[in-house]
Amino acid sequence: MDPTLLASGAIAVLVAFLKATADKSAELASEAALGRLKSLYQAVKVKLARSDVDAGVFERFEADPSSTARQRALEGVLAEAIQEDSEFAAKVAQLLKDSEPDVAHIIVTDSGAVAGGDVNQRGRYVAGRDLTVGVEPPQH
Image (cartoon, rainbow, N blue to C red; front, side):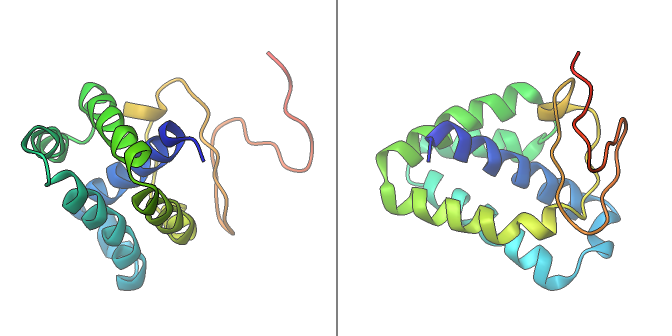
């Protein structure tokens, strides 16, 4: 899989995890769900801790995960780490796959990485603006 796509997916999960743990939405998620999200968080944090520069980028992201500039900076650093380490890439891909059902339970706001873009949600109970079910959406 493309390192940039893996990094982008990981950033989305990390933003959701950090926001969920910072506010009341963490109470809505099960311990197992938060555990799976935390596994990705810890894997990325440990990997990036091997370089002072990368660790600094991660710490700045942790301090303000809604900052698009910090998300982009972390995405670049993470994509590079994924490109250089195929075992880490496989681990990130598996952790993202494992966390898919859990991320659907976290509310996505129109800010940060999703502002003005498409958000694809999968799960039993999902909702959004301009929702179409069973038909192709109109082309703009």
